[in-house]
Image (cartoon, rainbow, N blue to C red; front, side, top):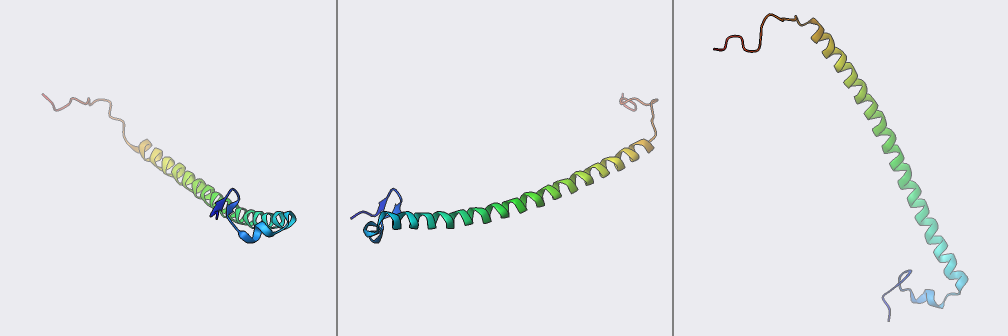
Length: 89
């Protein structure tokens, strides 16, 4: 009595089936698996598109924040007369 074979769990009914029936059964299983993989792929593609949009929005926000920071830095006075050691003995 076998519990598992190279094609998966042992199915006694399958051993009595003709080779054509066995092939048809395998093709059916492959078609089901193919549909599952296609659905998974579609979901993953949607996630990639969503994450791409999110990344682009974050890059845009980062660019705007850098521009604001640069504008603030431009407004700061330059004080070349003081040195980092001022006030220290």
